[in-house]
Image (cartoon, rainbow, N blue to C red; front, side, top):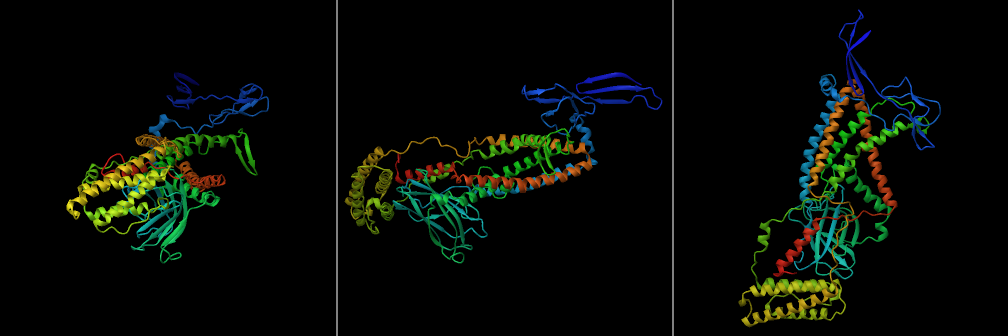
Length: 631
């Protein structure tokens, strides 16, 4: 017989202190009663809603299973969602005190965290190296007055010893002219390493037209001169036209065909949109960027999603997977759950489908939101130091030899276009050679003045000539008059150059009026919206919060299950992770690649914020070189 002394009425839980008067029992025993509610529902096909008509909860119902007794046959359920295993948070201290008897889950988490810290240190070091290599290179041998820009991206292959120590040069050959031979080098970083993607800005005096050929060459110098070039992209910064060159060959004296100088043809539209090319590009991009685990080793070189962030996202993803897996692990089978799909002896029930759906919904924050934030953050661009600006503003010593060399170079670059109908001059060696060169420039100005129809070619040619003449006028003004045979020659050179500058201004203004530059519109981001740099703190906050919550519940469930069940769960978790990393995610990458290849959608050319800074640097270089503003 039980005589209740005190009843604590808590929703869903009753605690009753009872004294037992039977001689076989000791007095003062506290009993704990747990109450639960159950409800049987079925889908009413006429009323189109859930109903309880004709159904009641049976006596065999438990907190994890519901017995429904109905007087009709229909699909019914006691709950739309499948509830995870029960765990009492109020017993946290009690469960954590059992760590000495059940250290399985704790040991697993410690191992994962130790591996994470080691990998994070390596990732930070690799990110620091990659940050220095991310720089887009403004070629030093670009002519300061050239203002028509091409962006060259060169992908070095991933084969063994694919990188080169040799000096590489490039020449662009277009339908309306050729560029100079440019040395592809950067004083601040090593270029053309294995698997690297290097970007260079090449400036020309005028548009080259349709770039149909690319000439690459190296001097076979250094300890490992052999170079495997994968592919090259050339983008016209002004028109956004892109040309692809599928090189896929060795440039080496002792490998491949033994040639270190090759001319490549631009790929045709059917080659770019071929299934093979798109599938290979999408697969490579997918494994290096979309497969979150594999991308840690070799992410895209210019991605704002760093290795440290990828490692941390993998750790958070792992912890979240562990928490969800242990919460739904070894759930009692609901015999009343309808079978949705059956193949032989394999049956997929509604309960299993709902567990998968709920797990996916719980994984959304780590798998989508946090990763998307890190992918979409606009990188912070380093500000140019004032020291560099001060050094660049210092006037340089002017000599007659330097003036003649610069004038010769301007005329040579203009003569590289067939439309200009301008022959090159012989080498300028003395002051007497300056007068024929100025006459040739005057003839070219008259040619441009006589062109009735304006286009970007004449706009950029007239601007390039204006910049060159402005530079010549500035240098003549600073030149020692004694550099000429007599002072009259110096004054005459100043007068002629000043006249040519005014005429060049008139020609440039005329062509610019009839062919104005395109209005700059806001760029459409093909790769999603770009977030401010400070969103990185939001991403880290969400990542750390989810990781902490997942770790807490994983430990709580592990202590609740006990040692034997925890060991079985660890084995189940290992199989689940292996399946996800090595089977499901690779299949996802390959599937997406096949879909895009069948839809014939090539990989878009990467947009980057750095190009704006490099263009500004080139314009500033032109302004300083010419010695005047407004150019």
